[in-house]
Length: 113
Length: 114
Image 1 (spheres, rainbow over the protein chains, first blue to last red):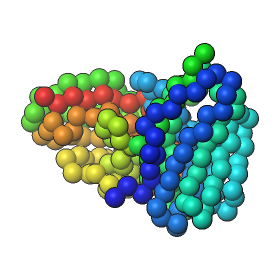
Image 2 (tube, rainbow over the protein chains, first blue to last red; image 1 turned 120 degrees about the vertical axis):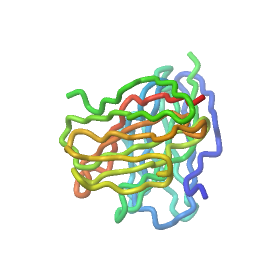
Image 3 (cartoon, one colour; image 1 turned 90 degrees about the horizontal axis):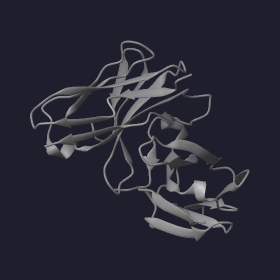
Image 4 (tube, rainbow over the protein chains, first blue to last red; image 1 turned 45 degrees about the vertical axis):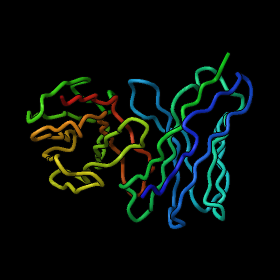
């Protein structure tokens, strides 16, 4: 029973354009959402997060949007750069059980020069 | 700070062998975690620890054991390795409640059981 889903295994974008990575979840009780970025042969690294009480969080080129009614979040990268090419995972947690991360299966982003 | 370190980076085991995956962190985090990642899948939690001497099962604990004798170290033990345990294993740590929920990950151990 996968509670967090990333339905696009891969995404290809031209350098300088916007990348939009999507994530859907099934449990409306999640309190917090995080995006991680992973390069080959490395561990995931934290990118950006958003609390369930917000609908947007921005950090430089990265913005995460949360639509609670649709149980959907998205990560926007503007402008995309070749160094952004990586696998992106979304994750969700409950504040009361924050040790347990529910990860999506990841989306592989390829930014073409 | 070295962050979260894992050894070995790669290992090939024969069915039935045992091994210990090492994990250490130097950030004084109370919380530590072990995940596995299978191809095309997200990370699944194997075990976690909220402090020295305290461990608990995650989503996929069967076939694994852990111990936490110090704040810094959180080894994962595989007994009687099976092909189904072929995976990439990640260790992570975090501050815990009241701080950022962010988990910091090690570089991973790629394990093949044949």
